[in-house]
Length: 254
View 1 (spheres, rainbow, N blue to C red):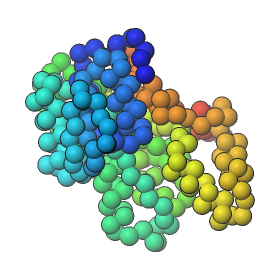
View 2: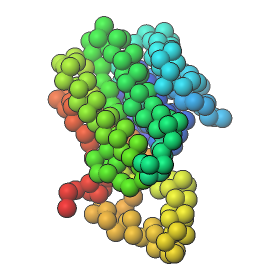
View 3: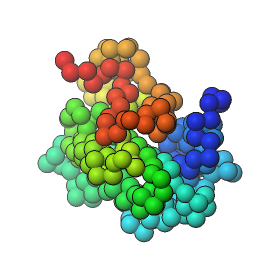
View 4: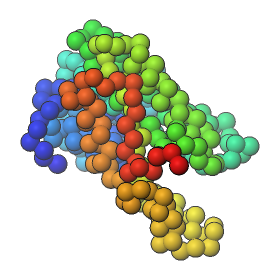
């Protein structure tokens, strides 16, 4: 994607969960606008941009979170933007959630966000400042059934975002985004399973979800990355402690 704007020329951007569809799109978008990009995930994609720095690790662990952020500083000499995109999902009623699954979901969504943010703050505080953008979820705003651990972790991310914004102003800004539904292969498979469970077709299941979205369209990874780049840009210099809803209106209270 080539925008020609180059809003992040010379900036250093660190992205967690960068091997996934959304994370890789975020990396591409920042790179297209001139940023030097540092990526981490539990696995490294088969194809990566040679200009990027890649760190493989489990950022739920303090050592891996610190190593990711410190390697970014060592390679590029600074850290201007951190995007906490790593995420994990689980589906189960509360009485059936196993300890390991609770720890996995809360660990990736909340604990890793905290640990990477804590490590980044140490660098950003010694600079002129920085920007942190956290990827939350609609489930953190509007509870969804069979996802208590996911909803709880993402709701906590929204509050954590506000806390960081308040504590580290005016030098450091911190905001979040709540993406709408992105029609990935994983989502399509979930619709197929739901349709089979309730005895309807895949097309009917998809149409049901689309019917509750005011703008009548699902989002793309680029829609979400556009919002993240805006929040990280100078155009958003007076925005902190807020959440950007990128759901095509699905979260409008009604």
